Each structure stands twice: as structure tokens, then as C-alpha cells.
Image 1 (cartoon, rainbow, N blue to C red):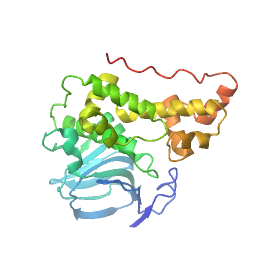
Image 2: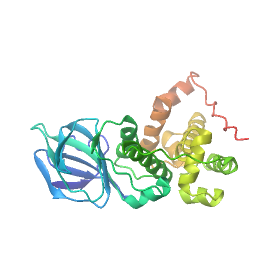
Image 3: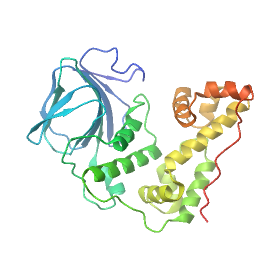
Length: 295
């Protein structure tokens, strides 16, 4: 089986040989791949990580805990660390899937002293967990931002607890002062992606405590909150007459395509389309969302 780095988001496995693994840029403790193959691909083996993925095309089949398993497109696969499994395509059509390999130690913070969840059924239908995984598995040509990883880990922990039949983690009394500090800091730094450790030093809360309190008070995560502030700032820069590449650089995105992807997901149109409408007077550059009332 051939393994190669990403050479473009749209292509991935689409025009490659039948057996290929496409690897994303690494993040400490997290690996991401897309795999395409026909027939049997992997002999029995074990990971010391969670293996979490989404079947995209074909039928994904594997032996796990004494049974033959099958995953159809849209299903989520959850393999516990150190559980033996193999892998292959269940039909002659072949198989395409994306997988995230996660070191269990990264879940110690978001699980807040809870034991690692064991999900008995390795193939589940869970739209929420699928969406969380695909957030990390969509743009495999781009590196993961630290604040996004915090959000990802919190979402994965919640999904694993849910599938394991364990109660969800709840924040205690909302930390309004700390969340306000974080909101102000994220709003003041729209020119770059803020690091998790910055918010920890500022608020005195660890990143996962802060994420739970932040979501309770603001309805979203610190990563999502700052992403929207950066996109709103990009809109202001674009409406002032700057180019899209300039707007992307000024708001801390890796490149214009990185900004385009998030912009369209947030506002329902590309920044180029938005700029054209704004220039014609169809949309307004104003309308930044007010800060949440934490008093």
C-alpha cells in the first residue's frame, strides 16, 4: 500500500491508485489519514491510541472483539486502545474512509478524572460525533490549530462518554470573570490564532475547564468564538478595499483558501461573493455580534 503526503484537499484519494493512504500534517498526539483500498488491507494489529473514523465510500469491514464488523458510509468507527483488529473492503467496489488516531493521554483533561470510556460497539450512528470528527478530517492539507484541538478533544470526550453510556461532564458554578477575560482577549487578538496556554495564564483555568465554562456562558467554544471574531475582522478588511489574500494574512489564516473555507461555512457564501455584494451595496460590513452579557 502506498503512503504519501497531502497534495491538495479536493483530490485526496479520488484520482489515486486503489490502495493508498494520504497522511495529514502531524499534531502532537494526533494523526489523521484518508485511506482508499480494495480487498484486505491490514492484518491483525493493535494501536495504543483510540482509532476514530468515518466511512466515506464502500463497506468497511474488520474483525474486532471476536466478531466481524461492517461500517457503511456515514457510520462512525470507534476502536479502543490496545484492541486487536484487522481491516478491509467488504465489497469489490473498494473502500474510502478517514481516520483520526488519538493518544488517550490527550483526553485526561477533558475527561476530568473520569476513566477512559469504553465503547462496546465499534460501529455507531452518531451524527454529533461524526460532525466533530469531520471538522478535523475535512481539511487534511492543513495543520490543526491548538484552540481547535481543545474543542475537538472536548467534543470527542463527550461523544465517547455518550456512546459508552456514561454521564456527560457538567461545569460547576459559571466562572463569569474568567470567561469575560477570555472573551476580551480573543476579541483583541483577531490578527492571529490564540494559543491555549495564553488563555490558561490569563484566566487561571486549565483549557478544558475554561471550555466548559465558556460554552455554558457563551453557547460556543473559545475556538469558535475567536474564529468568528477573525472572520468578522476579515469582512471589515475586505470591505475597506483590501484583497482576499491580504485579509487572510491580516487575520491569522494560513492562506486565502483556509479563510475561504471557514468564511463560507460561517456566512453561507465565499468571501469573493460577499465582497462583490458588499461593493454593490447589497450587504453591510457592519453587524459584528455583540459581546455576551456576563454580568
